[in-house]
Length: 306
Image (cartoon, rainbow, N blue to C red):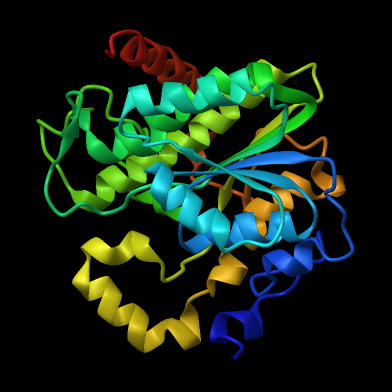
């Protein structure tokens, strides 16, 4: 069934649009010989991303919060998969994942940082920091920076951001309130974590400049997945309006798969994509100064972790 939004949304320069699926953006493509890592492979967008990449011949390193969840997900996919545990809120788990990839000598053609948590109704902290910021940003920061040495010469890093980055406070990152102690709102802090994902991609792209490696951020669209499990109102609204306004999981996975695999964006870096086309984020999300500051603060946080 075509959504109302699809009816009025024109195709972008890529030839793809709001309703395009992950299978469609890889149609006719062979990823044989390539290896890609996907976080949050056990459900929703991560599972669909892993399925389609494996379908096209890639070997997929599928990570989930536990090795059991990763194995269960990988077992449902046709193709070559390697399950690994990577609990993003646990630095030791993330480092162990990095060590496993390094020990196996695996070179990565893409890292798709898909996993995340959203809209925690009450303030929760991990290692003294607000949980959404720590899990969605710091966890992926440790993973990606730890695996840069395993990225191939033309490797791509794809960060799952969101249009929800616009929910962050002006400036994007509350550097004086990363623990939520000066006030917490579930959606403002989720927005901040997605803002951080976007800034991380931009700063990483700057650091990769002069190489053929790329880093980009994507907005998958609004999809009914496990991410909204903490919000009964959103769950109810999704059940009623999903056929009209929300993307399917297959459509939601399209943009991250497109950015990770399409030859046409091999040299595009530091951008924000939506509906498989370059999009424009909030103006302050373009700040190189804030991106650099976030990177430096993230390094300081990681250095102090057990």
